[in-house]
Length: 332
Image 1: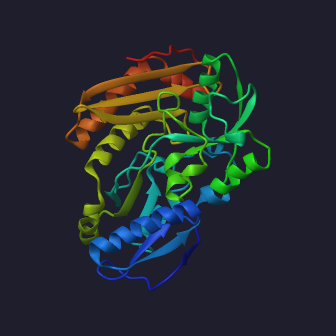
Image 2 (image 1 turned 90 degrees about the vertical axis):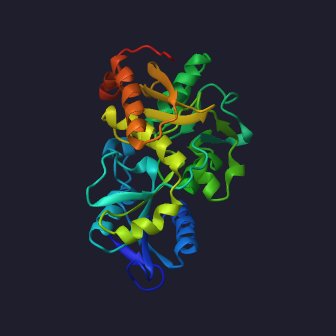
């Protein structure tokens, strides 16, 4: 791990707070947003400490290197060693198992959890030509894109891509790809939401568990900082993402697995949807459950575990294991 302080002097809670962040433009935008909020709430200045993670330097496909924690491990190590006081993660990149030494002190209000398409010539997903080449490094996205194409009697070629947003969008501009799929929240945080040519509804492309949400993490024994960060937490977002991540945990899947989950509220109830599929889109397990909005994290986890159990009963484990096991596509 390498780290570089961008400004100010390292300090402890009550003085300058050191915030660990990845070095990408998106990570710095997210961390800067949190830093400004922390300063407004506490009056303490926050300096950004840039940290290079394994996911940033490896050029391998995320699915090949496991995905889980490749962007978070170095930040967490810096926290444990006391090199930074807090860290900001994209929640969808965090493993579901929480280290005892650390705590998710705040999960701010979530931004748009959906995926978007950035395509040449202003194409939407529905009017992409047959055989269109769509860039994505996500097996979850590939599975659902290919299932969508099959349902419409057409086909797409999903192409593994890595890199920051500019790199991935550049493949479209240069003509190597017809489109790429990105997280709406990422484009929005960079002030580039207008560059999306189509916003993909969750019924077509269910997002990753926790997508659109940030996680602010610090040491579990730093009671002063935990208390200071508490006003940044959004309880509604925390309940929703807890249910989604419980699906992922119960399926014993990592964040690069072909798993989507989304919890949303309607008329005092929470609807939790989950999907697992083969990357060729031939087979999906797609289920949903509705219950009164959970009032506690334990109840949110229970709802996620219940949905995951139903998915496993319909063959989800086989889909994640080898991508070939048969399973029905059902919605409850």
